[in-house]
Amino acid sequence: MTRFIEDDLRATFISIADVLIPAYENLPVASEVDVGGPILDRILSLRDDIRDSFFRGLRAAAGKSPDVAARELNEQDPTALATIGLVAAAAYYMDPRVKQLIGYPGQARYEIDPAAQPDYLLDNILQPVIDRGPIYRPTPK
Image 1 (cartoon, rainbow, N blue to C red):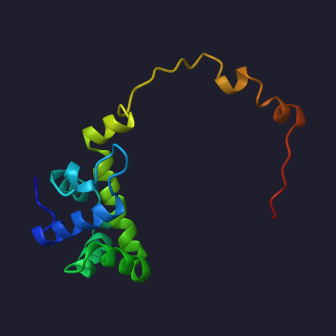
Image 2 (image 1 turned 60 degrees about the vertical axis):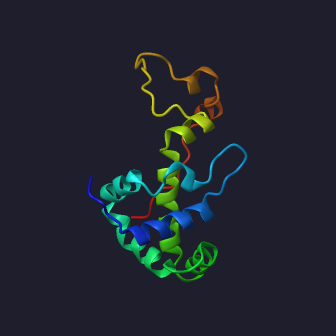
């Protein structure tokens, strides 16, 4: 796999990810699940649209303590911080250990019977709307 990020910026990302995703109860801090490893390169390979703001934020944060960097990014470039947070969260929640700890089994396929009556019709929750009839405002011409 192609490496999309240099080691110094990767280290900056990991340190900011630890600020954004600290350890909580039984959940590990971001760096404990290798958010800066191969999954980071995979995410960056799939999302061309976020690379500019991601790298802009990391370059602005380079050499600063992660707390200060996150605070400054939040004030000066919230888009970059949000992008770093998005990537950190994606990498974190794709980790099998985190999935297991939060009880997320992953995407599952459910068979749907197209002939079966939908649940929302079985419990009569829509009946008041059906009884009321259509209500709308005509759009101006």
